Length: 337
Image 1 (tube, rainbow, N blue to C red):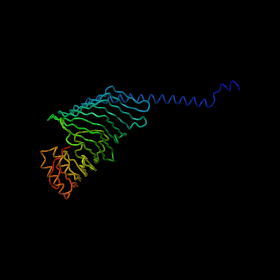
Image 2: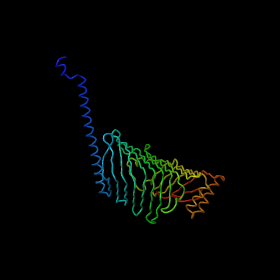
Image 3: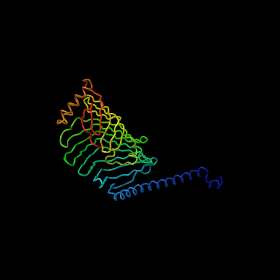
Image 4: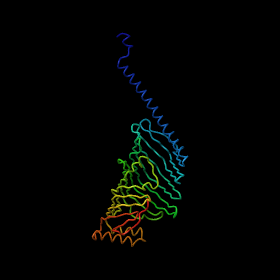
């Protein structure tokens, strides 16, 4: 073997050299791009919060960090605070953790720790805590396409400004799912082990399971803009595919039908109501609202009469401008939205 042959690199060696060089170059460019994106997230969020202060909105992401290198991008805060002086509202939460895959930046997940404290002028407050609260978002250039929220072991208290009394609430698990469906907005809600109780006192009833599935027509832009406003349901219409309540001991209720909400927030609709174990419903509702015993008895008797004396009935429930009618008899007023 000659000296020239030994000194001359082999074709395989050249290929390895260029491959290694390419890997180092690509890795360097990727790393620079990741850290540039992380800096942009921090700078843009800070600039956004600064700009919003001019219109009365402020926010804080304590000890802000962007983590996840090399394959994820995530915003982390040790506390979150929001203030809206225009509406007299404020909210504070625990730590926030979020993450999005670099190759799927439009899909993100986040976890938010409690406790939470929400205040709305003139004195309405909500305090809450949970063991897990997780959300996911799928977005495109036009906005949010769908989102989901799930939580475990939620507990809290809502306190009204006028009376000062509080209503405690809790749930073992809950989920909320929203998605665009062409121009409409689909929403699905489920709550397991819903417990309501006075601030000081026992639960109003045994824990119940609640589920709801509905579509709000021509309101997909609500999800696209990710904007929540008071009275946003006014002037809307849709289809309630299912609202169910399982209160245990065979007590179930199911409501379905189209609905609309006028500009004053009054609900109208033609619903089908199925109620099982009417006698148990009567007994338990009387315990919650003893002052309305006569009305509760009359409604229960009417339901059983319409069902031919059976303990389960399916009836038409008409709602006109917030007033609910059962067989042309007004049985109550629904709250405005």
